[in-house]
Amino acid sequence: MIKNITFFIGLDLGDKFSHTAIIDQEGMLIEEARIPTTKAAFMRKFSTIPCSRLAMEVGTHSRWASQLLKELKHDVLVANARKLRAIYQNTRKSDEADAETLARLARLDPKLLYPIHHRSLQAQADLSLIRSRDALVRSRTLLINHVRGTTKSTGSRLPSCTAGSFGSKVVDSIPEQFQPALFPILDTIHALTQQIRDHDRQINELCQKQYPETIPLQQVSGVGSLTSLAFVLTLEDPGRFIKSRDVGPAIGLVPRRDQSGDKDPQLRITKTGNSYLRCLLVNSAQYILGPFGPDCDLRQWGLKLAERGGKNSKKRAVIAVARKLAILLHCLWKTGENYDPFYYSKKQKPVVSYSLSAVL
Image (cartoon, rainbow, N blue to C red; front, side, top):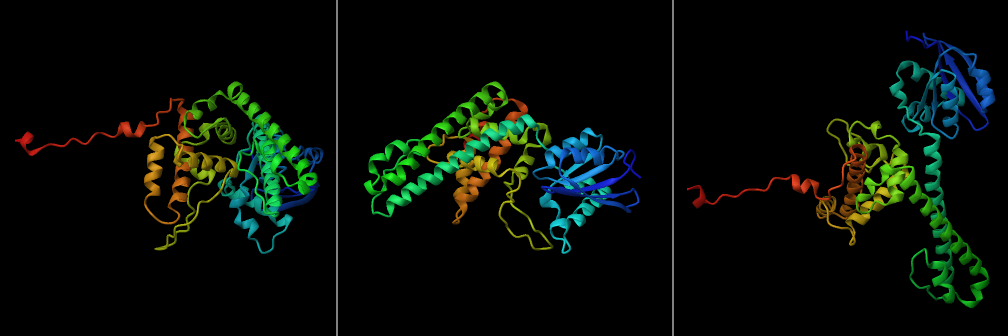
């Protein structure tokens, strides 16, 4: 018997309607219901239920639903949907069955749900600025590729230039017969570039004024305001990880494992966690290992790893450096220490050689 917990409730959230399953302490199913996915309906339903443990899968509505239920004094668990094989591999899957499975897992052991933590509303709002910038960049890239592909079909090629200067550099190179169709696209690309620069300015202001903890992270080469702010807002609290090494698995930068007996194959990385932050860290790792990356312990370690041979050695080195970079950023964030690019080199003791004559 669990003290202060009256019922165990599974809540399968839907876009318009949600299904609930309520079981008691002995595991008996006592109620199934279907309610609208609205704050008013949730308030009417769960305000009359005594203190219970509710389990739901993470999703679009899980943020506000979990917050509302916590305000009603319920114990709320937001499950990691990727870990619940009992739900997504169920051969008799239905909304009602999913709700009952969540309730029974909450009763058995909350750790089986691999509960996640929603970031604060302010952090989510600030993170949406970064996501909006990413959407603008991807839209601009799509339009640039469209313009280049269209002109290439005529046998002509547009000059090489950066994405930021594309709208002004290629105007004179557009074939005359394609100008009515492509000039409006160039205007849109120019407008997107201005909006991206505005977002960059806002991100820099956030780092300087609201999130000063990002400044020490930017001491690392290849890490700017965008990557440091995304790192801080995504993890939100450095205390979530007891060890800095736990950050790599949380972002999905460690290999999957499927070991059984003598079988232990080498697999690809898990790619769990925030995909955008993982992409930013990989981009920073590519800069560190690239021709313009300054010399440091992380670069030397990555280059040695890339020299081991194999057609995928460079790719593996980039991922490994990205994982090491995530550990380094978390350590700097947690300790507040200044970054020393040759910290580990200085820790290694020099090898002292003795000549035979000196010994004698």
